[in-house]
View 1 (tube, helix red, strand yellow):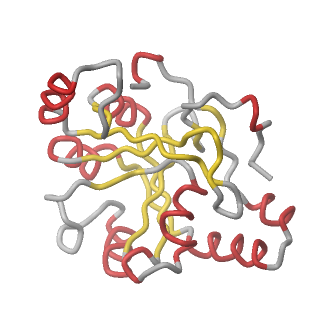
View 2 (cartoon, rainbow, N blue to C red):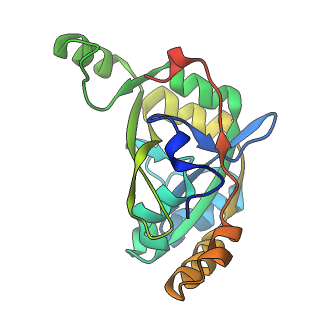
Length: 200
């Protein structure tokens, strides 16, 4: 049921996304007010968008569906937006990122110092299937704040598309157990190759 891959062959941590030579697609879910302003201007508008808060971008469509409940969980996440950003910007975020949680490769003190100095958080969460069940491999989430958020809003974003109707269409097929039709509508996310030094 997973999109385009033999699940057993997917590395534990791997970025998978819709992308082309210049852009990579990430997803966010927002209220009508934030979504409508962003679609009108081609980027996020403050207010209603909050520049002082960390904002999380997700290349995985199904992880976004899990987080937002197919756009049906609450009014603050009812609109699913696909945001095409520059690959340079995406890779800048990876290069300036710090893991949300310390791991064994770094001491707690080093991690705290890096986290406090970094405008970007990297989090690896279980990828999801069409039924939003967790899978063994992980999907990346990237939290942007301060300098990174300013770059995202003012430079990286190339276009914004409302994909709420797509989310609802796939969800309807899932409810009806029409999994092949649901699968056929899923965005074709392929491995996005970056230097392993960026995959903290």
